[in-house]
Image 1 (cartoon, rainbow, N blue to C red):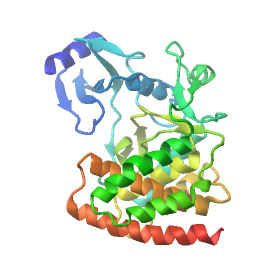
Image 2: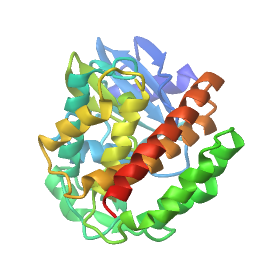
Image 3: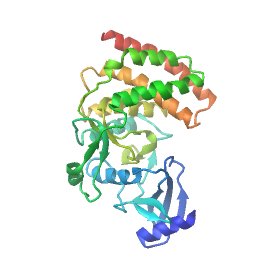
Length: 322
């Protein structure tokens, strides 16, 4: 294993690494931190048969003038021993995985708003950037949108909830699963079919936001960024931060939204949209963590009760506007 890392490092940096550490955070790819001449870099080997490594590199280049992102060392995906890899400079700092606080959370909201404000698109879809384009301006000008294979974002996400995520909750003793499905089916109309799309990170969570103190020093892992619905991406991201400290005595979501609003306006009907997407994305996130076998029985019991409480609150908010 270490031999391929040494080969990759010599190929790109022309030096052998002084130190190699495997990064446990890399779920989709083999991820390593290497030290060369006292400087730290991240080397990622593709763990999937897709273009996610290339997409991540291009997203770092696209956002280099918008939010803090890693500096790319390889502008294109490289190959060693038949395996694809990329190299970027390592962002200094720590993720907020075990340290979510109000100021960090507000700063995360501001940063997500800047990502959303980077560009707008006439419809949703997968984003493809040309390999020869390098500056943010060139990348945006040459960017192509490809429609989702399963139709609209709405159908892609909602049908996935009905067919895959809610069954996971049922199988794991979430008696509230039927009520979640009923709520989503009743209020599907809140999920728009047509909208102006924006860049959506897909996994803007404490794992992927790096801090030095309270300030953000880097946003990482744009592997599957797509053009999507800003308000849904906002609520999903706020829920991701909340799930890292769900028992906090301060409102994680409200602080996240407060930071977001410093940069970008919320829609007029945000209260009911937030209620709908809160249930959809909490249920999705919980089911996804269970699927990864990373939720113990005590945590499942906590979220069983929490989802019941949230469903009551969100029903009231939606019904107030109907």
